[in-house]
Image (cartoon, rainbow, N blue to C red; front, side, top):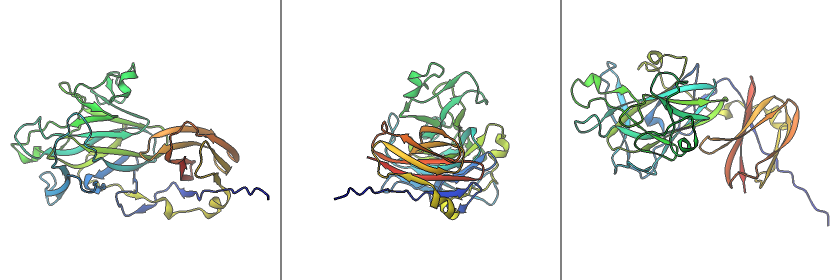
Length: 332
């Protein structure tokens, strides 16, 4: 009996790099445009059966507007993650270094040093903090464990774990109500590093992960702005939330017919044929972390070695100036 060889071809999504906007449902990536990304915290998918809650109140800084926010009302988790992470998927179109800040306020008590923080992680090519408003400042921190092996970075004073910063604010929860909310996101106890940065080397999908630390810390929105964009523009309260991107809204059927990526599932190699673009292929995990990069040339076919990846779900993607493709595959 003849041995039948079965070729498994992935159905690859290919889409225009121009925005394909869709209703944000908490799973689609929020799309950066012109160096700016604005996300309302309540737009994330709050883990089921967790102590994440939502609330609202009149905005003291924007007449006639309402602030919708999230907060944690469970036990505080100062030395480890709570296990109730909220993942915000993002799509970066303009690679570079961005500053992140979120708008929040202390929701209970009278101390500016309590109920004022959450765990923060940006899955990017680099994630760090500086004291000065410069992404190239020499005095920089990064979270544990990577800071312990990086001779050019220090570890934060105070809590840090699993690639997360303790990200806090220090505005007074009493007094003039117009001063209680603010875009303040510090790290490092005792000597605050006020500027948190993420570097994205290539256009593509990444993520921001937030976990509970203090309870009753109210979080309204977060903003990523490219380093050449001013805070006054980025933190304007009249800015709308960024649109969400849905790749399935613009599928190039001709490209689907010619591009082949196989097999799936696979144990050690992924084959790609009929690539009609020059690009850097990237492989990411489900959190958006870039694990591998491959430079390819137009009209090439190649085999990628993924034998060192752990078993699980991954995504392979690439793009040029007009199209991009992305596909999920399973490593067994």
